[in-house]
Length: 138
Length: 489
Image 1 (cartoon, rainbow over the protein chains, first blue to last red):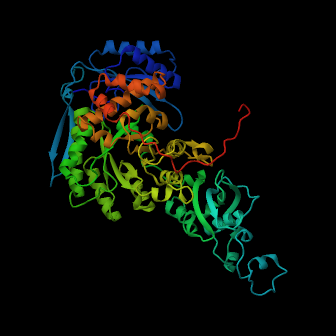
Image 2: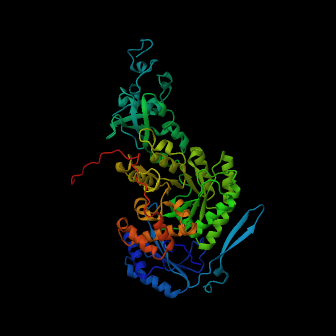
Image 3: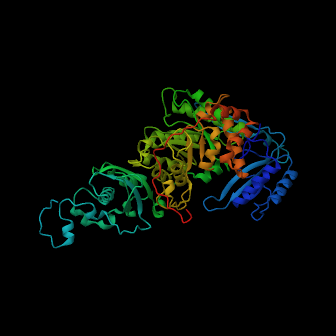
């Protein structure tokens, strides 16, 4: 199963050159780039772990790429994404967010159904990976 | 003019209110020296007076009939601060290139309107006046809603920014598809289309405007099957997905019941049609805000009054009203698809729906600066006859904050529905990637798509099937303006 969260998940994994030119674009737009990682890819998991604060003052794509690289080396088998934050009034949110690294195996999600009265079903989904404790999931 | 009695001739106020008929301009509805206040509601009408009717008198009549006037003098005006309550036509100018038509600017005092009520606003502005005999035709082209009035509305239940955060989808337009055929599928087969399209890569699928609760599929059955499909697709992709469950029904009670059921089943979005009326729309917006639900509005019926330039209401005005009313999604045209849509005019609608401030922009049909006072934006929806081969045009014309809906362009794919969805998603992501890399997607679009198709057979098949399909007809609803020559020109 391929997790398709993020802006470019339907394309082949981006090369470092491609990642770098997206970073350039974000910097040109005046957005702050940040790196986040997780072992819990549930789509409602809003808070991935921050790999440091958003790099508001780093205006150099090569420097940001080094951060991405460092995160990938520290967590070689996790989901890692790159976010771009726009502080313009009325937006004050992400403008771009895409996966730059993923675990070798992606077991995906189990869909749980709890049958209720009539034909009603209460749905829930659970990542197969999160059955194991943090640090041992992938 | 027939006047009764003449004992009051020496007193101007008494003279003014003597029983009888006066011209609207004489009654005080025309004031060329009037300077609109910051808090005035402004309206721009395109008027086509009957032969022999003076344009400024026609404009005054529109001002009168859309505010305090009736056809004759009434003495009871004198019990009110009538000078303040009278709308004032303050400018009339000929429409460029359209003999016999005039743009009439009219200002309304804020106190004429109930706070937070689209029904009340529209009952004045388009209430009686469109049937007025001295005019051959009348069109409401644009409005300026003062911030003081905008602030009395809650606005979109969710708004574009929060919608993206809830869905966890950034940096690209959202993708959708309307289930086809729009009528006749059973609930089980209908849900199949939803599942295939969502797991193939779309973010949303959609009920069509006329899918409510018919003999072939009752609403509860549709909701149950669609939510099974949505949840299966979420588990298959790890993404948040949604199906716009159309809760349009005969009564508010029915609509609330259907919306509550959608919520109970875990849907992130419900849908209504424009034909339910402004009050019902505002009620559903309030419900959606209260229940953390995205509210999709299909503009069913609008072309009956938005399409012809001489009579009716411009869709940019409907867009403004719907942003006030509080919907999160509104169909606003595709430019390149099968339905009416001049590029500049449609971009005007998009800007009205999603920008924090609209500057005066005659080229896009925007006649007033509009400050939205922090009201969240509405996500415009592009739907009707679009396909993956147009992705570079769609992205260039419409930008990122939009939902691109490929109904036929997903479900009609030669390799199946999921393949159709994948083709659209890959085409979109490839185009966004290329644009961000600084490539000229307008010119290189077809090459970018062809490259992406090398690693995506479904996209290749989509391009082979629809690559050449265009809908090239002249638009009927285009802006009328004379470009101001610049010094350099």
